[in-house]
Image (tube, rainbow, N blue to C red; front, side):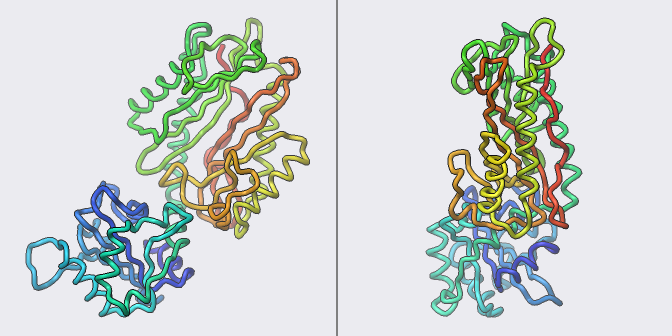
Length: 404
């Protein structure tokens, strides 16, 4: 709020920003403004963020709720002692505050494109506009990218903790795709899913989506079985794919790795599968090289897909920001079913301080499977540094996890 918010308000020409929430119907921005010990808005909470200029900085006022450990100054009606703001009294006090500061414009969170910037509910908007009066209503503006970029931006101090969170995700996947968990001919993909859920719970972590484990069986013409479709018994020679995300301290991970169940006498996967994984890694390299500050997500997608095609890879890119949310605020770089670009959400420019899930897949024919394609799904977190360079938060999968 001290290092990110003031320059963002000036970048988007916002004099005053109002964030209005009611208990259990919070603006998505709410959780990026409050202490981690705050789980919901207090009755109605109105945050007023007023830019007094570079020397005085952004004034942070709370009408309703507490100071969030000193982040906000609690603004109360001096005529009413020992009572919380409620109903008309709260709106009248907001009008008084706005009139006193007379901002040139007032940003509110309304957007038809970005969910993170569309937090002002219809009922609250009606009451807000009535309370502000005609003159102040004329100052209202939508500042979609202010809300979006504020939620999107990660501070460098967050990275060490996030790296540790990723270490736990990688460790659990490595154990899940090993003989500790998988007994060929007995264990199902659903068993692995629930093993991951149980170990995450025991480690004190949450999960922001139900994990999935895909089993690809070369003996059945490349048939692919997903855990959400029902249990599939894992057998030797199968290829495994997992999608798994941990949550902790309001941060989220999103990881996809590949595994292989060794046949008798094998010490590694067939050469065709190893080559397929290398194609996935090549796609990662091509995408990261195209991710530069100022380019939109759609521009990056177009350039990276052209590179993938030139490399002779049949691939799909669907990379997204991550952080406070699994599918986080910021520019989308494709969706699995929108490889031509994503209007609106893909038109947002990339900026330093954003974390991305580098999510993509390739379909590669495998000679040892009679030319049948294997699906290679890969996902790892990377961040855009202050100098605009992309860097893995922890690292990426370099080789198949092996079940011996």
